[in-house]
Length: 52
Image (spheres, rainbow, N blue to C red):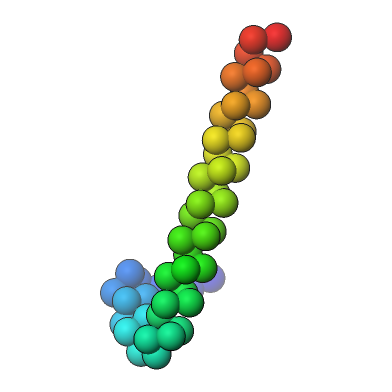
């Protein structure tokens, strides 16, 4: 498995068109929101389990 450096990611993003960059940023934002929602739900479930 090869790894890509943070700088390589930045360079790749800069090569995208403005529209593609905007789409990428929105996609990342939505995925981060969904990940956070799942973390909150899991935390809430753990708290409910601890009360039982």
